[in-house]
Structures are given as structure tokens and as C-alpha cells.
Length: 170
Image (cartoon, rainbow, N blue to C red; front, side):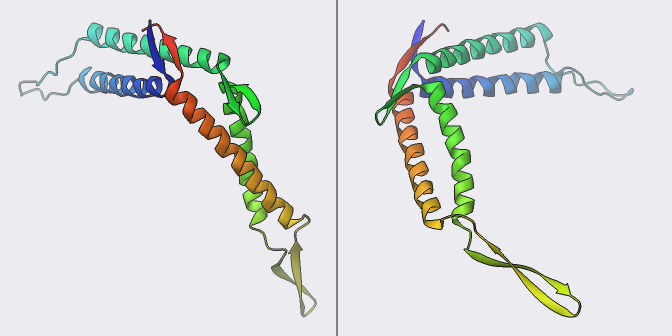
């Protein structure tokens, strides 16, 4: 059993994924070779059993670490303002709010009245306008409110990821 923070566990996962890519690439490039009939072949070093076992060991470590992170995310509580929630709920909520923030950002950038393409009625051009159907000031306030909540959540999550330790059976 080893204690680690979520930040450390994620860095370890990245390192393991890099190692796995190395071994998968080695297998891809060494499992076969091309040689002309009249030349001495250059046969790359390749041991299927060694490569397969190494990849399997890396995959097992990755699975153990990801499970420990998921278990910690499901059980650890984080305080955001006066609300306490599990890390996994916090991550879901942040994703929802980020989608909402994108929409609010689009709405707040709209002009109250914009000209759209002209339509011709007979020989006369008839301009058409698009009008917003909401209170622009309210949207701006909502955008700022959602942005602040996301920032508060991210700060709480950053503190958790850097400080709270959990057990990993590696």
C-alpha cells in the first residue's frame, strides 16, 4: 500500500501511459521486418513474451491507480462555500456549469438588435433584424455568477488534489 495524492497519482498515470506507448511502439516496429532476397536481414530485437508481460504489468498498475482515484473521488468530500459534495459530484457539476457558461457567454455577446440578410419584395429590399428576447444585463450577471462558482469549485478541487492522500495498492 502506498499513499499518494490525486495530483501525484495522475502524474504517475501519465508516466505509465508513456511507458506503455513505448512498449506498444517497440512491438509494432519490431514484430516484423522486411528484407530483400539477396541481402542479410537486419532483424530487430523482439521478444513477444517480454513485451506482452511488460504491457500487462503496466496495464495492471494503471487499473489499480485509476480504481483508487475513482474510489477516492466517490468517497472524499470537498467543501465549496457552504456546500459539501463528493469529488465525483463536483467534477460532474463543474462539467455541467462549464457547458452553461459557454451558452451564457454566447448570449452575453449578442447585440440587442442585429441586421440579418435583406429580403426582396418585388423590387424593394426589405431589411430584417434579429432582436434578443432576454435581459442582457441579467445574462451578464448570471455569467459572472457561474464563472465564480466554477472558479471556487476548481480551487477546492486543486487543494484536494494537492493535499489529500489515499491508499493505492501498487
